[in-house]
Length: 111
Image 1 (cartoon, rainbow, N blue to C red):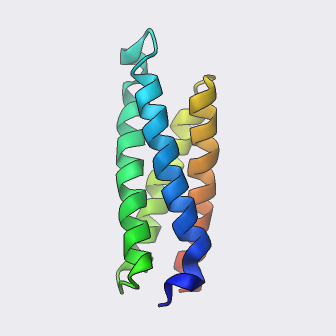
Image 2: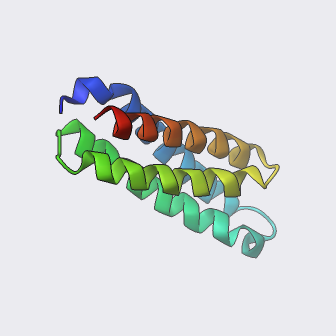
């Protein structure tokens, strides 16, 4: 599988990871951090799986399709959680996560 074929998915994964990192760090600065615990945990999970999926695609791993399917699930869960919070960083994260979930699903069905 050529990484060029999945460049938009790779870029969406890296963008999502960076946005999730920002969201987690920003959530830690909120007054009620405990209320943000699930958001922070999903941000961390999402950032890590997005970077892993991007790396698998970039090197053409035969496991890319399976990993991208899981990445889409994690991104969707993170995006849905972030969408519940009105802070700008959470709303931006929700958008990045849902875009990445869409790209990963497209990639896994195109492969």
